[in-house]
Length: 141
Image (cartoon, rainbow, N blue to C red; front, side, top):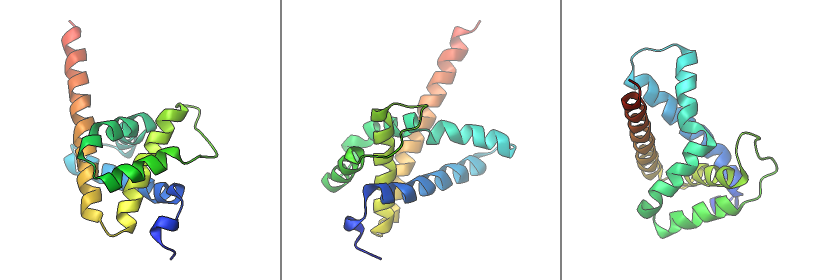
């Protein structure tokens, strides 16, 4: 395999997307209660959609090393051939940067750091979701 730094950030993101998806699916199953695969899929979408990933990047910025910030910037600035219709260009680029960072860390043998960052992001999104549910629940009634 060629040097990781010579790979395109899109290649890092391709791998990072899969790694992040596996982490989310695994944690949703572990946390139970038992759900159907359809319910699990709907829940997973809340964590893996571009908007959620872009929020993670903004949230964890202070926890990133200078090298990781450079990887994020490189991924964010990478031109992509196709932007999904359900999101905007900026959000999509930040989500690609997140996936790129995860793929890069994995390919450079830093799986523990990758898992740590995913864990920070996952916890952040869960807290955000809980707060939203409490706010919406408090407004009903």
